[in-house]
Image (cartoon, rainbow, N blue to C red; front, side):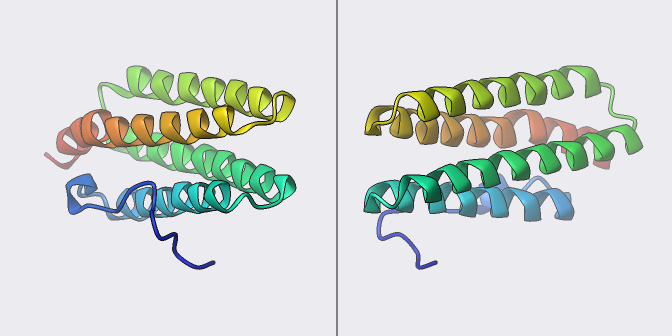
Length: 137
């Protein structure tokens, strides 16, 4: 897929947390969010947007499972709190998918992508960074 002329957001090395496999996953997630943004800008077929939203859900689920394994292997003391953040976010994401599915319209699409971007960036820069610092020391 071609790159959007106005991506939702650009990768920034400030998002690196120092755990290569998780940094790789974070980059991929940002690519998925930019793909969704481009599809919404181009008004692509509703089924294609639904597929991308499903792909993002699958990526998030797999990414969180990997991150939780890293935390368990690293004996991260904040594991329970961090996992709860993941679980709550996935619940919220499913709620957004339901709203999007049952109330077609740009408003929910923009709300989903804005919420995703804000949550992902905040989570990487706070919770993931803190976890990484504790595990790597």
